[in-house]
Image (cartoon, rainbow, N blue to C red; front, side):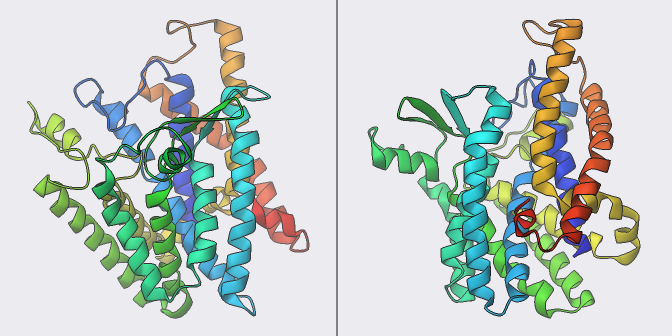
Length: 373
């Protein structure tokens, strides 16, 4: 589906932007949610754009699993097996190849359980959940997204297996296994809800015509955004409260300053609302033709993800070696505009290799391992 690959390509580029920020603008770190009193508007917008990445990608993963399964003789079994196998692979990649790209440590003393881990765990969970009737799966997905903030006040108890499980499901924190410290950067409970909703939404691409599907996507997107403004306006549940600022910009930043770790109800309403509207927009033939080059990144997302991590690491080390520390003890650029410029250069550098891999993936259907990348 071109629209799905285009949206996936867009969020991969936004992810690249965020990782360039973390690599070359490390001296201006942002909290979650952001401290709007100390973050300049350009940095705030850059970080907010990146918020779209994980929800859209997890949702599209669920949708793609449904579309993959429906082409097979036994749809649920095929989708379940694929999700289980690929989810396990993603978990292994996070613990090894991805973590090494961030820490450059082997064997690792610290492991960060980040987005690839969360997607892998969510895929494994969906492999079991998809056997439920679709209305039940929809209800579970909605309940996990909308209800997990009710658990925010619970701290998980004393250290031990139960506390470790709590950290994996709902709270960022540290635990230790065999002398290795692990940080649950992406608690997975709400992400399981998002992937379940994506699987349910896959039926739009299986049965609805183009016009009906666009209407459904537009309606879903607008309803989600309306839900965000309603819940955010009440200011009582689903995220940290917003406050009136000294200026319109400060008030707007506070209003849209939603929490990603774990993704709050308001975070998911906002990002999936925008994602559904974009998917509807990309369904239009004229827009899809104009943006089709972006589908290259969406057709080989894991290849792009792994290569960009190591390319950014290499660029940083070369820059540090060439010019030395420029921002305290680290090398960094001075403006958010420079972050965007580096992102554009890296994206152009990765376009041809990603295109070549995507074509190989499409051509060699007999190489089953390629579908996992």
